Structure formats: C-alpha cells, structure tokens
Image 1 (cartoon, rainbow, N blue to C red):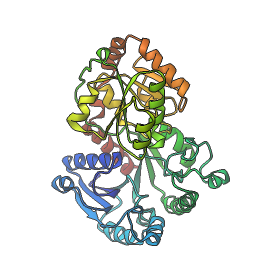
Image 2 (cartoon, one colour):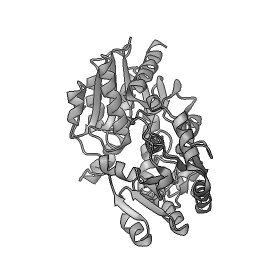
Image 3 (spheres, helix red, strand yellow):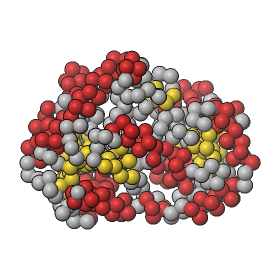
Image 4 (cartoon, one colour):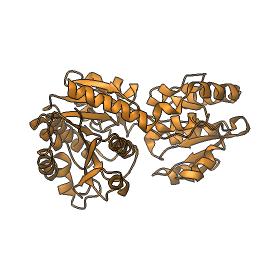
Length: 405
C-alpha cells in the first residue's frame, strides 16, 4: 500500500516547468493523505511547499553553474557525495514496500549518485522524462552549434566527436563523462519506471532504454487552465511568440517569417537574443518577459500563436494555454507541440526549421476562416483533462501499480 512519495528535484524553488510540475503534484498528493517528501539541493525553499505539509530536505548547495569553486562544481556534477550520504541516511527511515522515489531532475546539482542509493536499498523508482538527459549528454538531441536536431545515436563515436554543446566542446566532454557516470548509477536499479509526458519523448528515448527499464507510462503534465475564453482572433492582426529568447526556441525564425510577409508580431519573452533580434527586426514588437494580467492583455490581442521551436521539446504547455483561449497554433512537425494540433483543423503544422514551410503555413492561416478553426478547438478541447487533480489520480494509480507488481 502506498504511504510515502519521495520527490527528487534539484531546486527547492520554481525555476521553470520541471519544478512547477514536481511541486504541483507534491501538493496534490498531500491532499490525498500521502506523506510527501522533497529531497533537493538548491535553496531557498519555496514557502508554499512547507505550508502545504510537504517535508523538505534541502542540502543548500550551489548548482553547477552558480558554484564559485569551479573544480568542486565539476566533481559535484559528476558525483555529489554529500547528496549520496544524506540521501542514504534519509532513506533508512523508509520501506521499499510502501514508498516510491520519484525523480524529476538531478543533473544540475544532486547528480546521479542518488541512483546508487535507491539500487542499494531496492526502492522502486519513477523518472519523469521532462527532457532528454536520460540518454542524451546535452539533454536535448539538439546541435546548438549547427542549430538543428541531432540524429546521432547518444554516446556513439559520432556523438562523442560532435561539438553540439551550447558553450564549448570542453563542456561537451564533461557531459560525456557525466553521462557515463549516470548510466552506471542509473542502470544498477532493477525497478526503473518511466513516465513520458508526450509521445515525442517516448518515441525518442524509450528505444535506447527499453531493455533496461521495468515499464513505462504516458502521463501529460498538469496545468491550471481557465475555462475556455474566446479571443476575438478574427479582429486581431498580431501573431504571438511566447518563449525564452534562445536559439533552440526559434525566435529568429518567427521574426524572419513575419518580417518577410510584412505581418505584425509580438514576442513575449526574454533571453540572450533579445538585443540582437530587436536590432535586426525593428518591425517586430518585443515585450520582454510578461506574466499574469499583462500577459493576458497581449494574448487577447493575438491572431494566432506561432511556436517555431527547433528541437523536440518535452510537452509545451503554451499550446494548451492558447487552446484554452480558442487561439489556433502554427507548430513544427518534429516537436512535441504537434501532438496537440490537428493540421488544418485546429491550426497548422510546418516543417521544423524551414522558413519556407513556416511562411507557407502562415499564408494558409491568413486565408482560412478563423472562426471555424476556433470552433474546432472549442468543441474538442477540455481543460479538465489537464487539471492537477486528475493528474494526481492518474499518478497515484501508476504508483500503486508499481508497488503491487
């Protein structure tokens, strides 16, 4: 019988989607009278976790990038001995018969050393595939130097020789070594259970590890969506881009396509490309990072969303957010976002990374009856499918099935 869930996550406060999902599910599990523990490395601790009744064990360490001692950062990234010792002592109070250890993230601070502990103590573990670090050294199957999806087999000679890292080949060498450490630690476990958050993550990752894992499950990430609000897209004239401004997100593809077509665009997001893109594309409106009511204000002005990501993605929540507003989306074919769009019915799909294909999709969008696309979205999309409550029910069913095996 399920009594305890131990959630493993690098950070004790929200930095992005991984923490959002981990913390949301943790809070909902507490409501189901399950004892929930968060084992984490980097503080400060989000007060809402404690207020929700979650037991937080925070090591108060630096993550790899913020550690001023670079040599220590390297060793900790490969094998965090402090985390290993603390985790081993912590697990002594639990039984593997009624406890699930659920890993959300570990590569930035905790390291894969924790997998040795779960193997030693015979715990059944669950890993949610938020990214591709389980098999890919750089975590994305993406070549940051050449700006395209990588087709090399992870850890093959071609992969090792390829400088695909966003920073340098030295960083790639570190990632290769870290992957070797991780594979050795992870696959000591005989009870590895995988949760894929999209068909894309399953299709890409599972073939490389299916002989080494016990079972895998499909479970979409939870997201809090408002009941569908119809945005008057027929009256609007601006396309939206909502993401951080980094190479793999395809912001430049968005700007180039709309500039070439002389169409209006709003970029909602910030990042290292902000200055470069603002100078290069003066007709595009760059709004910076927006949230809450300010973000909603721009969404209400949107004619459609263009999601031009150049890599696979995990399970982009932006698409669901737009559908909850009745806004059709234009998405790339090799990205997980394409799973939520039916081409020509609730939006359009274009060839990943192709400026020509994106412009062609935009021109189709310009000519289509937008009211029909919106009606299709409203008739087929149910926000209740993604609620944290429903996600937790499914998650508990997964945990129970694993423990009862």
